[in-house]
Image (cartoon, rainbow, N blue to C red; front, side):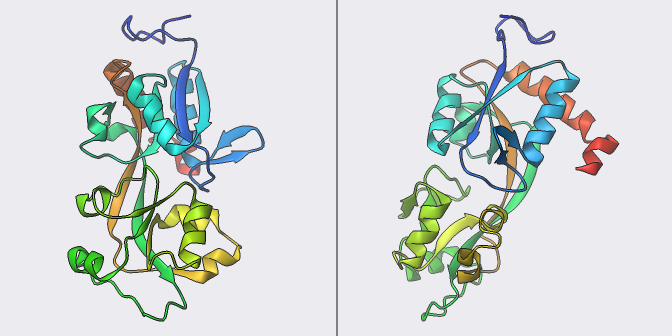
Length: 235
C-alpha cells in the first residue's frame, strides 16, 4: 500500500477505487472495449493524473455502486446527483461537478391519451399511473423519489415496460436515454415532455465511511484546475 499524495494517513490505498453504473450512457460514461470511457472518465482520469493518483474503475449495477460507497467498500462514485439522503454517506463538493442533465418524463409517441405536462407535478402525478424509474435513481424531488413508482433494473427494461404500456410515463435523464438508444427504434417510439422535471448536477462523490473529505477537496482542486486548461476545452 501507499499514501495517496500528501493526504492524511487515513487515506491509504494502492488505487483509488471509483465505481460507476454498468450501463452505457454516451457521451458521459460508456465502455470502449475493456476500458471505461466518456467525458466523466476523461475528467476524473486527468484530475487523478495531475495529483499522481491511480484510479481503479469498477462497473457494477447502480444500487450496488451506491451501497459500495456508503459502506466504504469503494472510495468514490461518478455520475451521481446530490440528495439529502446521499449527503449522509458521501461528500458532494461543487468543484467535483462533472456535468448537468435534464430529467424528463417520456411518453409513447402514439399514446392515445395525449399526455401533456405543464410543470404542475402534483396534479400530473395524480393523473397518471405510477411512473417507471430506474432502480436507485434520484430525481431530487420527494414527490417522485418517495412516491408511488415502478422500478426498472436497466434502461432497456425501462423502455420495454413503457412500450408494453405498464405505465403512461417513465422518468429518464434525457441525455442518457437519447445517447443509449441513438439510431435504435426505441428512441423514435418516445418523446420527452416539456418542461423537464428537474435539472440535476452530476458529481464524483467520495465516501464518508472512508473519511474522504480531504480526498474530495484535493480531487476537487485538481478538477477545477483541469477545467481551466485547453485539454478540457478540447473535450
